Length: 112
Image 1 (cartoon, rainbow, N blue to C red):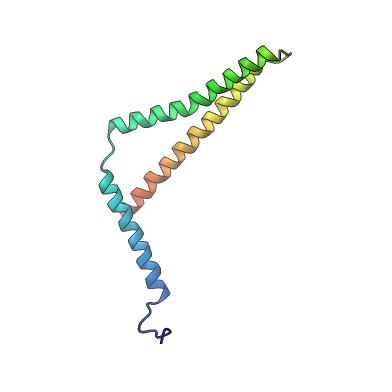
Image 2 (image 1 turned 180 degrees about the horizontal axis):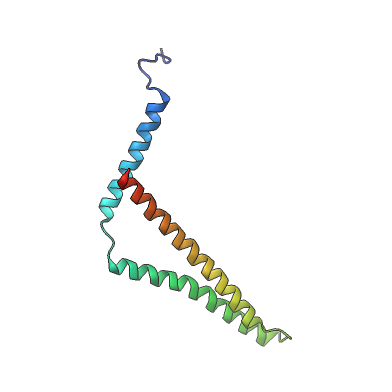
């Protein structure tokens, strides 16, 4: 009785129904969130700036501490500042890539 094809929908129809339900949910969420204005953009740029600045400053502070307690031939301050800058830029790049992907996904949902 559980294998009656008249009762169970074909696999393609259930996949299609899940896709439609997912797109509808994303559209409702986008409508609920509303349009993001200038202040949202400024906030995001500030967040990206902090995601670069914080690791850079932490690297510099750790390097200063290391140079004071363990002086050597090379400057740990410069090395750790550069490492912090690289980590911060990678973090910002990852953040921007995620936001860009989310914007493109929303655009495709609206078009499709």
